[in-house]
Length: 550
Image (tube, rainbow, N blue to C red):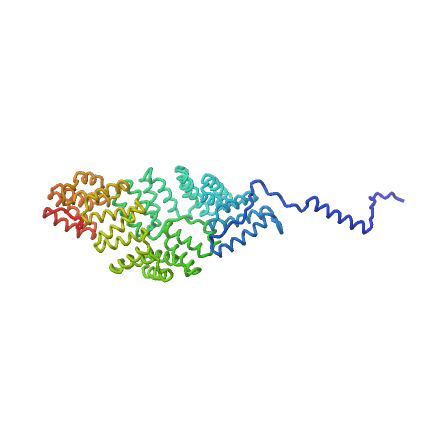
């Protein structure tokens, strides 16, 4: 018989096998085959944050998301792999950031980056955005740079690269790293051809405003080419031209700034994706407010307010802000309906009344405007916007004493309010209180030394007093020499006439006044010509101009 080389198999009875199986099962439990995995170093478990300041819809959305993550991060139920958990942290981080819960967003993004096996660029970008909002600018810069590198490696879009470089530059500016910021904005111009480069030229121009206003103007004009009604570009150009003492161009861009209805703004694809996670009245309200008051994007503001009102039609502040948006779009009928609706919902809303007064004023209904603004001022005595508008209406009705009281209220609450300070000076001059006007304008010009309208008022105050002891033609002449005659030629010549008349040289005053009339005629300045003609007649009669006839 051949020798059997097979291993001998030992057999056992069924009861023994059952006991052995049970023993192995117990051993498995004891030795921890079902133990939860250890988190990598640096991972910080989130805790359920308070959502009390959010509306019910937002609370419900965030509660659902965080409840799932609270379970996942402790590996309850079906355990996730680390990369799967990383994606969940990133998604919840997006939600936290979109609703402004920044501290928790930072934790989520950091955890996602640690746990992920191939970190997407957007995670570093959103972490940088959250860190910047939280004031950690240096760390934000580091993550913007990582995001930029990953976007190049992961075939990111031109708009994503532009957004990353743009915000990197902004963050560097906040750290006063002007040269680094300028380099980032310049690099943003080169990311591709399918971008709107106006936002980059605007940013570069703003970095040059203090150090090289001429170079700032070059970039700002490039930004203006594609966005001729952009309020933020016109405002920056106004500041730049003031720096180079070109007051004519400064005034032009100031006027365009007031008329503007658009804004140069970064199109951020990352942020757009975040915004899609929110669909509540409060979120639309926040977006509308940012567009209207921060970015000047009035059309976007209107659309967001309409969405918010659809979700919450009983909020008077939404109707009020929608009305303001319509006002800026020059859709006065729509604006009026919004303000009336706001009053229907909140009968004591002073701003709604004030805006109705402004509309009445624009329509030429001075008495109605005055009544509405008077009611608004009584309902909102601490609101300086209402006080300014009421003061303006009183001044137009030739009630300078009452207007002065409103303007004084404004500067009592806000001492450096330029519009309020200018209006106080205007009232003192109208009332013939030249000594007070001179004192007031001296302190005001210490704050706003390049403000030409204020300088011209000061020249009037020093030149037009009937009491010769209150005149100061020498100081007026010095002030006149500081005003660029090329920027405001008509006003400059008229001021020269005032100074000459104050010194008793009426022939010279007449020559200056004729020059002023010629300049105003060439510029088609219908706002100036009638008064210039009246003042010429006074000089011909060897009389000073008066505040009422300036």
